[in-house]
Length: 150
Image (cartoon, rainbow, N blue to C red; front, top):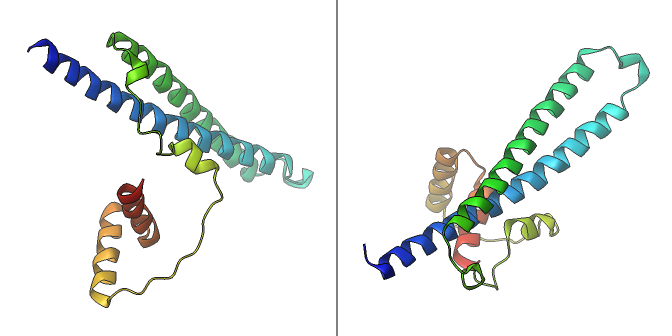
């Protein structure tokens, strides 16, 4: 492998690693929000239910989320180590500045509405593909538009 090919491979690997880090940071944000929500639920449970299975269920959920939080932090730290091992000038390897990161997108208002008319055949194909991907039709459309535009 010549120097140019090695540099190109390292750059692609660094970009992939940075993409994984970005997704992990977005996941971490979601997990932290979920932990806060579950803790709030726990705090607002009436004392008469304090020994119920609901408290145990919420506690187990919090523990699972904290484990996920820990794993996400490990991934983020490991990605930093991996990227630094490529010995690249990371100032020159950045995503396109006009694109928003997953974390920035998560911090924007939840949604806006648009109305589109599509054929029944397209709607059926969207439903089938959404089912294959285990997401909603709305999620599928959002993902497709996001990939195309962003």
